Length: 73
Image (cartoon, rainbow, N blue to C red; front, side, top):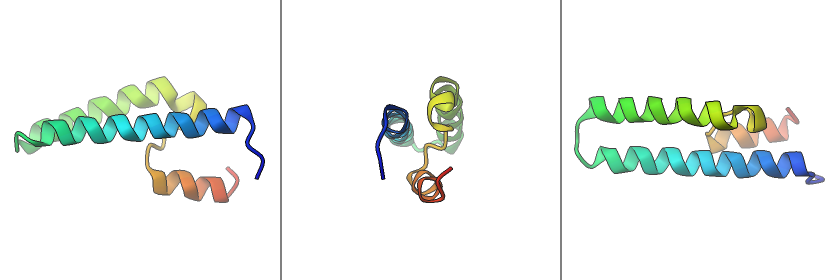
């Protein structure tokens, strides 16, 4: 599998997005209020898709990313 600039950019965007989403949800989840966890997850995901969606497709789920990579899409 050849790694060109576009594929590397997509992988880096997916890594950054997954990391940011995980950190955001885990940091707000400490307070134990499910409503705030859902709100921060939605806002963070919407922001990440707006920022990185054109680069990587905006999955931000490693399982989906790997599946799409193997499907060559």
